[in-house]
Image (tube, rainbow, N blue to C red; front, side, top):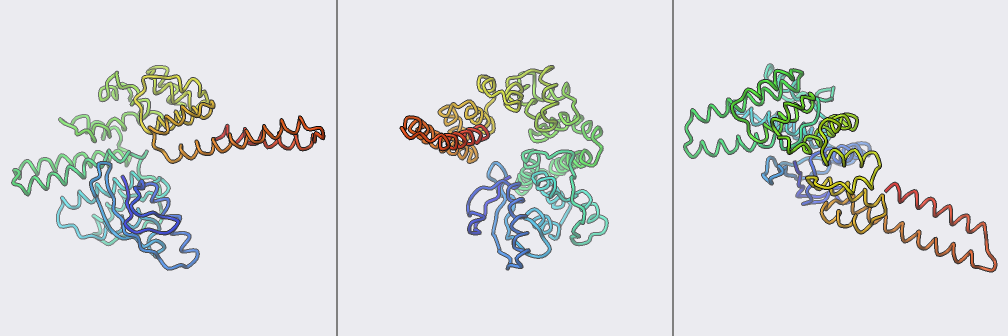
Length: 369
């Protein structure tokens, strides 16, 4: 999920730059705290939220530093919950989008959306800010898992406006409601029932299939997960195991279900960079190009790292490469100074020792880029 600001905040937020929603939550939370500490006047920012396919999901204005809100996620949630809903369909669209926003928000900023929606349904009251913020999900579901539902509902309405059979429309909405119920059940502790419900459905969209796959990985039901990815796509499963359970579980998974990607992840995170860059036949992604670029830097293969950077198109990797080159230039200069001093008739050992200390410090910096 991406956020595009049509206004800017000098030195802090750029206009028409595609930020990730998670990044914007952290950024606006930090800016909000700064402005409130200074008792500064709130700053209004116009923004739009898009899914990964470029479809606009929301647009509005957010006042950074205003009372009653602490970040853009908090702001959008409040606005959505204050909007009057005309029917159950509108409520479903809103609730799905709220859950989507939450899944793209850092855990420490997440609002217990299930509790909020239940309270709102019972009391039909306006927004009440929770004092407790915590995880609603057992883990963060990727943006694509929920975006397709919003897109499907939008498409459904468009088709209805063009004369789609009302009964078919109702059936599809009921199916979406069942999926939403399964998701909410999983996030509130009814994991087995939710998985059984999804597995029992006649058809699943790609988004729903990915969600089910994520649930199965989280529950470590890998044999069932293979039914949805196929034995030839073990690498994609290894990636999820790493994301959900971490390095230790991936180590165990790799022993029973070896894959090039699993081998690379283990080698990279264990600092075995030469082994990592030699691994082939991986399904490459920008993240993998970035990690491979870093691995090349760690074994002093700058040109190979640059090739990876051209594929990754990642600002952080480009920054690391620039830092690496700057350090190399400084090391070349210091090495030259040391050699010159050694050849000098009035050799200054103290100066040589000082230069060597600088040399060691730069080597350490280079190894930690």
